[in-house]
Length: 167
Image (cartoon, helix red, strand yellow):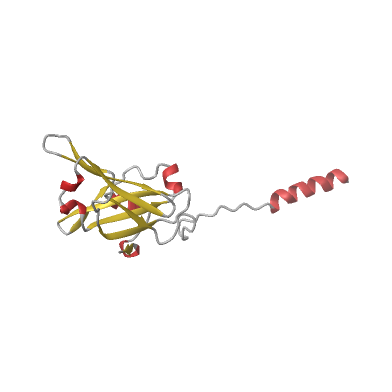
């Protein structure tokens, strides 16, 4: 009788066991927060040719940052260039470059080059940059293979209307 009860309990546990697989494709993604901050009127002054762009709030320590510069407009579409970006003289030698480093609180954009004083105001003044906050999950899984701006914001599901503009 004890064996029968044990077998019955075992069968009952198997039958009453339920499995649940949640498919969250239609649910909001609350654990990966992607954002874009747009900074306008960025000026690289002769003091040190660098600018600190402060985020509206700290980002997670696992997040990564991509920085893009508005380099022009073609057929009504903005052209965003991934940083670092290097410019060369006609003879092929380095003229200057934009580069950056970042923390949880800000991005330090800076120019490198031989004679930054002579760089045209077109490249030093009134620049527009977009800082894309990429959750660590995306970088870990190499989801963002193409770092072209439109591909990145599409992969991160960021709408143009959600971009935070910061002056």
